[in-house]
Length: 256
Image (cartoon, rainbow, N blue to C red; front, side):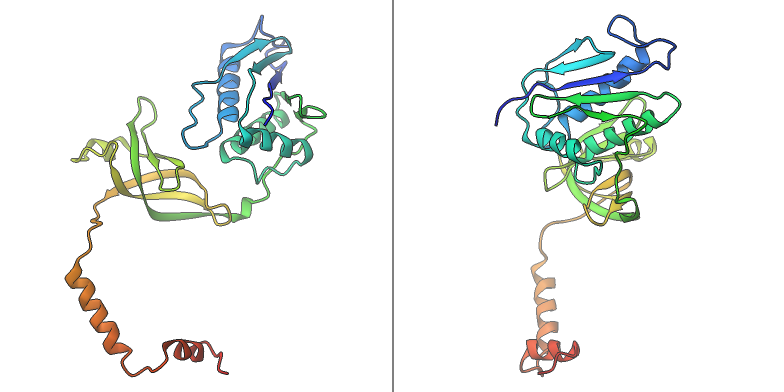
């Protein structure tokens, strides 16, 4: 795959002047830099953005990357160039685009553009664009148990935990300080079962706004005696059924 340099620009006059590398409110610069960082790195397993190299260049305010070969990022850029539906984007990039679209339609009237040699024209997010997610009705509030390895705990301003799930994705869950303060076991870098509340997408199986409720003790060892007792109960319950598959089909009303 051919490497691509990506240029992401912000045009914003809400401070009373057109921002540029020579003059920009610090909070705008910080927010834009954080958004660009999140957009470029996405949420692929192991992606932390530490190897990204960029330059601040002329535009209103623009950040130009070095050559990028991230296939997921380039595929997302191609999708943005041809469709305003962002459901299929990497979840972290989708969140950034949603945030930029909201800013563009707000009183700020900010405008964002993304260009790369492979794109016939820049992707522009403005008050006239309508980048949106069509899965709003697919998000439901759930409370469930998830298992993973705890990679980070704590935080100075927002208390949270970072959990590496079995599929490699990193799930960040907010929590109350008391939950971590009262925990008697060192959970860091160890497998754990946790109970969380979150918004869950029934199609993409993603979590949003996850919150840690509690750590749950569980034992992965098998109780052989209990398992044997279950087998015995099952054998007695099915002892009078000659053909289990046929019996199930009859229950379903699928008689031959």
